[in-house]
Image (cartoon, rainbow over all chains, first blue to last red):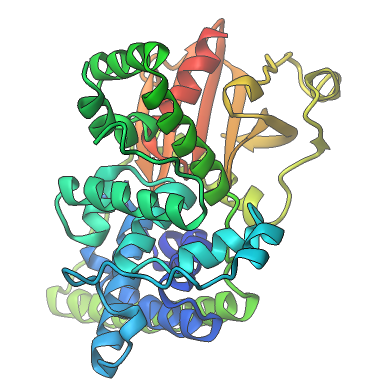
Length: 173
Length: 242
């Protein structure tokens, strides 16, 4: 059943839209701007909402809005989409002492998520925090389900390394 | 199943995206393979940690701005619609009959279920009785309803009961039970089964919310949440079997 009016479709998912935008941008002010722009677009393209999934539809618009802002600025290295070979991250983002102190706290998890490349970060947020299925994530991100799966697996491997949860895997390789 | 295959399927297994046969194969493999069992435990530990990450709710001023925008654009659209209708009436010179396709009764209820769910979250009126103890929640409904809703806690499978309240569906009072799955709230509306046989087991999505409806022991259940479809199905299935 398609929502009849715009605010019925969008307002219930505003928190989810903001949460997603906040993780994409890692910045409160920018997330607010992105969501507001996205809502203007959503209003304009309201007739493009065919099915029922207003939430996934809104995520897609938030994502597109953010990407078009990023490409306009074209200088946001940290926020740019993942390129091949761009697989390195600063292992020293937290010093070991600090890491020990704060281990497994919200601050550490947040820092770990924020240092992931955005393509990895968003699949983790959509899956673990927003609870989307692989199919829904594929639709929002605009990639095949197989890509969603490999990004999720790589993102999790990397988070485990950052959070020092992983044990050596040589035995399996 | 080999360790390589298990490793490949581990994430899909944890995300409940694996078919039943492969899930069973993974489950059986990890009972006998310590290395894969450890990997699974690590992934589970990671999932618990990540789900503890901050959830950023939209600031009030953003909500107010978006609402103002929506109201403005709708009044503009209404003026255009009225103008267009006036032109049409004038040019045809006759009255016209407008009708809207009547949505089925089930869709009407589903719509109301979603509205109640949204209202309970936005108005901060999720609970009349807030408790994870079903022996507190169940008696609370006594004397407030002319039926006794089944109150079941599913904390053991990760869906803790967190409270209940009175709500209204189709103009009649119903019991609303509130369950939690990580950041997601599930409302379950329970009332005695109506006599409309067209409204039976249903799987719906309305405005981005997943809905499950079923009849059990003479009671009608509507479960609604923004939780993903697979997990809501698991929840509904367990509740039906309880």
